[in-house]
Length: 112
Image 1 (cartoon, one colour):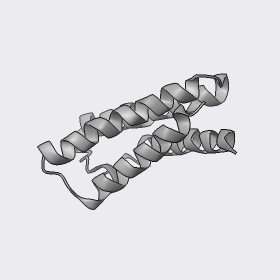
Image 2: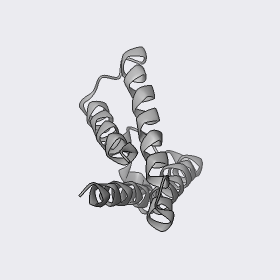
Image 3: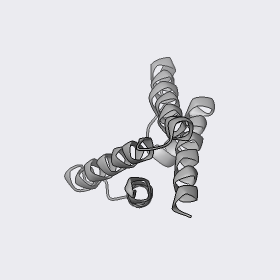
Image 4: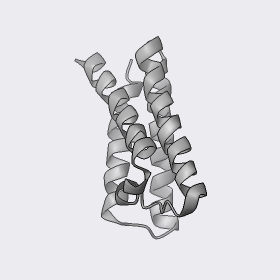
């Protein structure tokens, strides 16, 4: 069952990347980022799109500890997001939802 959850977590990562890659104008709804101009759109496609697709794909291709690497990545994001919520006064619903998802995916993925 845990292995299936890890696969789902990797697929969620790929889907997030796919949305950013193919529909960068939809990202303000789930990231708060404004894809203003070609440069902003390019950054969303490449970092949120390409990187997330790669991060989710590698564990599916290589297996093993690569799932844990992805999990530690999510937990790192969660730690910084939690600090940012307070430091940057960005306590909005979407930020808390993202934090919860990152913690859940992170813990699922780091389990052996």
